[in-house]
Length: 164
Image (cartoon, rainbow, N blue to C red; front, side, top):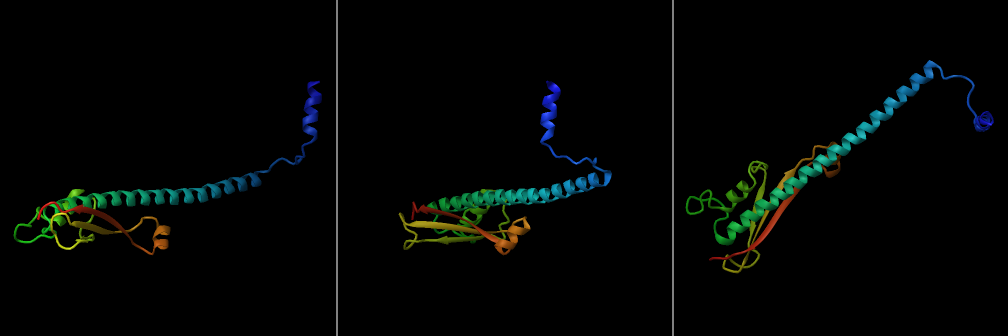
């Protein structure tokens, strides 16, 4: 009975009567190597894309934090947006506060810090808005080609001026 079941299972199969020779096995090994190489390239580009996404997110958080620090400082000292020789010398100005809020993570020489007063004047109750633009260069070549080189990341914060 057992031999009949085995014969029944093998009747529907069509197999080659020739055993696989050494040359065809080598071609299959080469095919596997090519498939793994192509898969590795896709995996590598995927990982580099994730790395770029993580870097961009980190920079966005740092820019938002720096802009918030500068806007909070300007809500108390609305006339000290840039350094001067008087009362707004470092560290008593918004540019210094923004640059030192997150440490050395950003190259501040390439960042652009802009201060806006959307409402008229720097009086109590008016708004102050700080925007920081920063160029971001992706590591992944495909993303650089699609984006056209550098991308500009921005951090933005708005505060109400508390004192005159």
